[in-house]
Image (cartoon, rainbow, N blue to C red; front, side, top):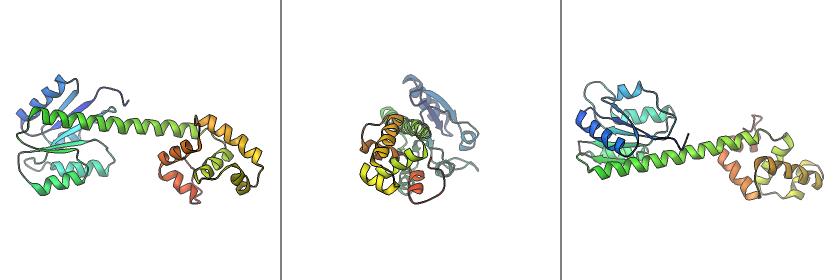
Length: 219
């Protein structure tokens, strides 16, 4: 998924602008989808591959503004990098857009290389995000193969405990801990305690909740 063809969504009410950007993107090998308003874009299903959104700030009529769309996407958990473009010089709007995570804010008219660089950077960022999500998903699948004891040992290793300390905490022999630990490391395809820590860190809040004593499942 993260290595597929990138899609560039261009949302601008000026037909010349959106078609020009679309042509540039197609020349660089990207799939392009053009929209005249934020309402049109909201009716579209975003592709599963890497993508970015080139978005104008202002739209005529009752269509949501670019900032409104950025806010709505964030609220619904749609993580697509946004490159804002605008024909109006508004420092407040540009600052707000960047604070909310926009990759770039380009005033019109902009040079072709400027928009292409911003799009390339956005797609690379989205590709890295998807690669991280793929890695976490695969790690969770491996964690699901662990026994309850192996998960306990994994979490205690994350606290920095060695086998002797883990044995004392669990009330079992050190040999038993080493056996379960070896099986756990093999299932997770890990080689060192630091890799265990990195794995759990990548899992995020769920692992933290379990270590705090929650009865909810770990992953």
